[in-house]
Amino acid sequence: MGLDILVKRGREIAPILRRFFINTLFDSTFTLLGIIIGSVFAVVPDLRLIIGTAIASSLALGISSGVSVYESETMEREKKVVELEKALFLNLEKSIIAENYKTYALLLSSVNFLTPLACCGILLLPFVVSIFGFFDVIVAAWISVTLALGLIFVAGTYLGRGGKTNPFLKGLRMVFFGVIAFAIGYFIQVLI
Image (cartoon, rainbow, N blue to C red; front, side, top):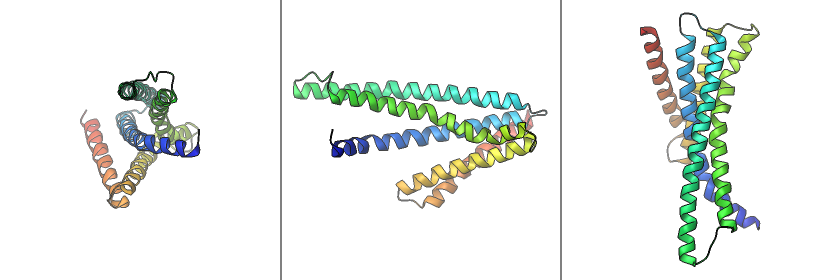
């Protein structure tokens, strides 16, 4: 397979991969933000409960998004193969086209599976450090919230670079929504 074909196929999948990655990054970051708010700012925060809930939720989100992306992408790409088969009057089942579509679906679903786990690892790092007594759970929570907003900002600036908006302003806009989500979750926790 020539380099030009690989580059062309990479260009085909790259926008889809970026969209799925960013969407899953936002979903997992906001989900973990909610878990941190609901678990840490309770009367008596339990470090094991926080870590366990975050990991279990991230794993569930990863499996859910990974499987749904795999199934939907497989279906869409199978439809394209069927359309090509009709147009070409050929069976493409064992062709490189059909195999590439399976590879694309697997790659996209893998990224969607791993993204929540990566976010979880980043946002749980302060809690893991707090296990060793460097700071308490509340400080770890505030560091983790800051990391979550930082992830959201970076993803927003990345989106801003791809569009016509100012990347810094796009990042700030995403952080604004993160702060709103945090504030709503925090006030719900205080009221309960």
